[in-house]
Length: 313
Image (cartoon, rainbow, N blue to C red):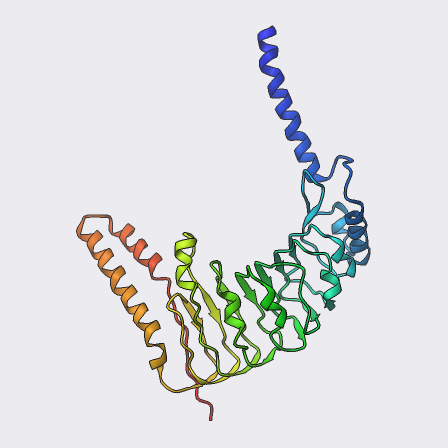
């Protein structure tokens, strides 16, 4: 019997620890929480439009099991200023809602740990001063369908050193793309830039970064760089494009000139095609199942170019 007890006791202890962890995640235990963050959430909930009482269980609030800090929010409703008190918030997901109103610098005052901000497909307006420097460093920023004031590419983007995905499509921004814009993507992690469906004009600066070709070396999971600049008012010559860019959409603009400026880009695509073709052919001749060879070929041929030159009379 003593031997059995020695076996059961550790198992019971592990089950107890597991149940405590689950309870903490679900908020069932009366665990002390950060008072300032609790007050911020209560203010947040007070201002929410929640006629169905869906937030009565606080679904969508993720807290750290050890520190009690709120680090994720998946909520709907207006965005009160009290959101800025959640100093440990790392991810904010409010996309695809019917949110309205103005979001200002005050909303981000203490969000020093915010890294992922998914807020596209809302009717919100971001109003910032020209000299504003955010307290956060974002990896993902999605503001599609917002309105920006002033209506230009915000200068505070220059302060973001880890940006990998940017969506500012259909935000009403106008003017030219500043020369510093592509420099913020001189990073190892850049993957998506979407500025489509705006009123951007002038010539597109060359889409070239010295660090982009190094990404596959630093990040083995790196697959593609997607740049979407369609449906703007660009004109002039086509830009030079890094061969590392795999998808480029310049359609529905008024570019002039020839495709010679993109020769290096097309040459890279052609060499890539030839290289992959001979790899697949070699595999087929080596009696490797054709399905595996074709799959490998298909995976390597994800490069796409959507470039249309439209002359408007």
